[in-house]
Image (cartoon, rainbow, N blue to C red):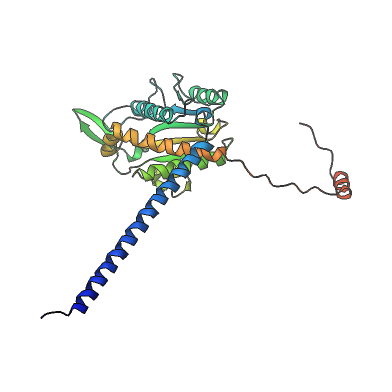
Length: 304
């Protein structure tokens, strides 16, 4: 059937109108995308400007020592052999990001003296942040036995994931918890998850209160390196080396780099937050009569 010229013109006009609408939508989406990217760029720049990275001093503590190497993995490797390369990766990533004063802390002194030494060295250096690097195990009653390369080894495949610990006895417990939360969230952005097993009754004396159920931050007041440090301090259990599958992942350079990048992002945010001025509330001063009455009402206080 032949269509009238009028209908043909109408269809063409409608088609052009539809194309114009699509074009407008595409332009709007592109502008919004560019605006979002620009906003993110400005936010990143503002964060970088607020944080003086070259002056922010981070201590990366390598958990345990060569002589007292900590837990044994499912395949018989020492915890220290996992802690050291991860601490190296974190330290290098921080330096590459501009945190030039980052120090990797190692001591040959065995516990308990070595733990006190670590805290004292960090305090003497007037560090801004202390991060202790460890890898996890489980209590002895959860351990099973298997044969690996002709040797009897011990494992537990029940739990996987990182965990973070802070101490309420730390001189800056609010700062410790704040950094722990930032680090937990960055680890999760990287696709990692925390292990909830420290909340379970089967952990016995190793059971701990979960301070942040989103980020995976636990309370552990008795840890010397967290309790005795005068700066915010967090202990990172990067994963379970007694879990046979997770042990293999934790040994990979890619996994170490993933964790290191998460630490850098958390340190950047923490440093920027610390650089922001804190609003001081004005102090309401009492009038002279009230002040005099207050002094008369209180006994003399000791100067000590």
